[in-house]
Length: 291
Ligand SMILES: Nc1nc(=O)c2c([nH]1)NC[C@@H]1CN(c3ccc(C(=O)N[C@@H](CCC(=O)O)C(=O)O)cc3)C=[N+]21
Image (tube, rainbow, N blue to C red):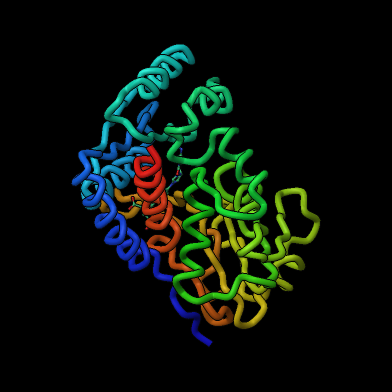
């Protein structure tokens, strides 16, 4: 078998063109959405992700406002930048790029974000709304990577209701909120959330109709682990060296040989990354529509 490709670039392009039409409507009413990014330090991967987010904004016709602080910034400096973004009228939504430099408490910073401007859906109020909103329409922003994964599966007609999903990784940005999202009424998947202390991850993956790997362990997920025909979503990225031309060599969490067994597989890059960015823009447009 050769897995069908869960093409994140194509799905993200479709979402962005839908968003562009909604932004045009807002602009006619004099509303211009603006995405702010706060980046602390000069990690090259973080820089490149933030640059991608600003490109997406330009494509969709929304403004973007970039705030960069040096790696030496203190907790007070970061909190002051967050307060400025909360107050800036041209910033209708923003993100604080994670991870923050060692020694800065990420949870404290996330809590300082105005929940109405939280484009990542990671403020405790919005995570709490995700927990509370088991049924019915959610109007709060959803965490971008989990929402992007669900959208990628939906747009490729991968069934979710009644399906067994095994998620590898319990992190704040992917695994933990993804479990909450997939078990909501209307999506109706059954979720096994595994992590570094799970005794036999392979066994949990073997019974899954859908596997989501978000741990950052290169090629962790092996073809022998996969139920034939299952959908496999590769989220993690790890820098595994540099090419001769000095570019970063990246590896996903999924062994490429999984393509011989799986029914669907998301490429990495070109899978979840572009979807994360598209859903971020979607959160910004949605919050401008609400305001
Ligand atoms: N507050 C916060 N929100 C985030 O959403 C957030 C974060 N912090 N910290 C880091 C992770 C990682 N992340 C990625 C987004 C896009 C790509 C992406 O677009 N990747 C491209 C390739 C990379 C490129 O073109 O530079 C792809 O997969 O095809 C990757 C990773 C968002 N994150």
